[in-house]
Length: 141
Ligand SMILES: [Zn+2]
Ligand SMILES: [Zn+2]
Image (cartoon, rainbow, N blue to C red; front, side, top):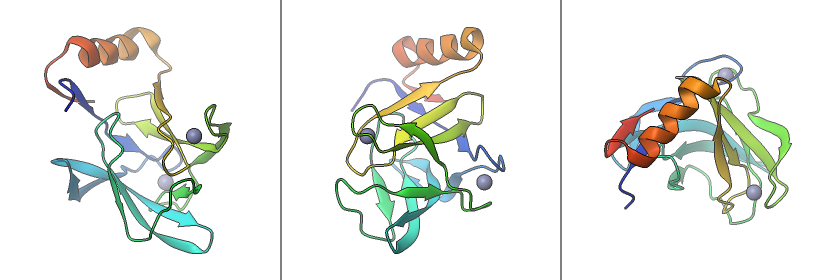
């Protein structure tokens, strides 16, 4: 277990509704709820909101290596972007952080590529990395 944990609160970049699921917890924190589509299968995906954790539950079976379309449950927009993963070339999925900035994750099951980016480097990035490296044991971000 990592010492310093950051819990991400994310929203849809299109309709700006929260993607947090306060009815389904993963690792004791609200999860991130999305629609998932793989080939002709579709269902609900809940991702752990702890930064760097890959735990998830889904109503459909997900096989390693498959590329999933992740879709906002509110506005039905596909959150996969045209940016490709520099590890496996699958589309990168982007969420907005409620406090500003974006979280990016790879849409391929099993690929661990993920990163956070900020538009306002001075305030957000500084506080994010400060808290990530040296901060309290739990940080809501
Ligand atoms: Zn939306
Ligand atoms: Zn990837």
